[in-house]
Amino acid sequence: MTSSVVGGMLGLVAFLMAFSIGITIGNHGERKTMVVTEANAIGVAWLRAGFLDEPDSKSLRVLLREYAEIRMAAANQEIELASALTRSEQLHGDMWTIIERNVRQGNDTDVMVSLAEAVNDLITTHSIRITAAYKRLPRILGIVLIMSTILSFLLVGVASSADRKRDTPAIFLFAIVFVAVLMIMVDLDRPQEGMLTVGQAAMADVLRQIEPFSH
Image (cartoon, rainbow, N blue to C red; front, side, top):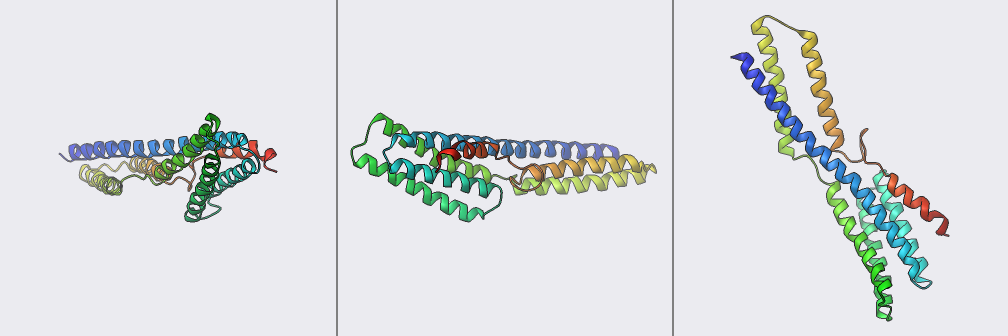
């Protein structure tokens, strides 16, 4: 009976762990995708900003570069997230003001429309990326997983005592594997902390590409 209960509990824990790590891997993958999507949106908007006459073309490109720098700094924890979000939203307003001014002055060509769409996509991507950044493993699921794991270890200990067979090395290895998987899951659930962070290579690449044209 005891071995059946232990087997059932371990099976439940394995299921919960697989389900939980699936969620965290999915969230981590979405965050990585959004970095690339946002970097592309910034790059497209920066290129299309060249369609504007001066000084608006340069002004918009300066704003876009600052925007990319802020996103990079926030991801690398060089500035506080709240400050980065506030400044990002201010930059959205400044960018859109340039678009509105040109449209009101009669610049409503297809080229202008494409620029407006690029800036709009950038703003939309911001909202989606923030949503993805705040996605976490549901708290209740994490609690149930931890409690189930602890209970399973206790049952394994009880079963070993009842059978008078203490396979200490096997139990120790079993515990190490479980703890390792839990640590990976927790690491994946924290976007910019730990070892498995979300890479910013795409954003760094955009900044590198526009650097020669920023002065």
